[in-house]
Image (cartoon, rainbow over all chains, first blue to last red; front, side, top):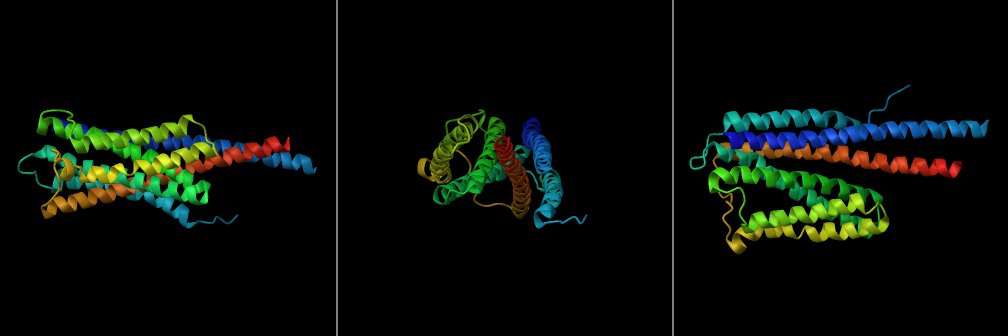
Length: 49
Length: 227
């Protein structure tokens, strides 16, 4: 039983940690994209005015 | 303002739930439904996650090879990003194979690792794609690096048929699946389905973050050009 438990724990932990790291990275990137878009819009507005 | 729900949005909201349900069903079948194997006992149940992990690793590396071929042929950035995301996922699943295998081998063979042809070829596969991932992470994101990586991604996949044939070619001790009781076959099927869901979900997540990175680069270039 300990081997079985260890094997299933390994599978779950690896998948969970990988999914967590991707979603965290994605959230940061989305935030950065949003900030850059705002900067671009603001710059376009000031240039046009 | 009207919100447009695309097919992609629907898949993104549906896939994580489907993955959770499929994984829970797989766990229930492994622990509650399938009977113990006569010779190996309960430790044989590791097989229901070990084998689908291997199949997902192979799927990932086949996608790398296909997308790399498409990238070399047509030069499409999206193909390169797909290859990159699939390589990472293939590595995750190949690592699971190499981690769960010894946990089965220790109680059955009495050792954590042996240089059996199939085990060795799987380790070689892991090393090849580890080199691919390291190349993508540390050598920069240039066209030349992408082309070198694409060639490596295509060449590396040759190892997969060798893994499959290794039992027949070199007569290793790794067990091969020949006949299965219906309960075992159903459990393996459900587990494979669950792993396909996990694979698809993680691939979409990873691809999206790679596209976001590209978008950031484009926006930065736009801002620099405008200033």
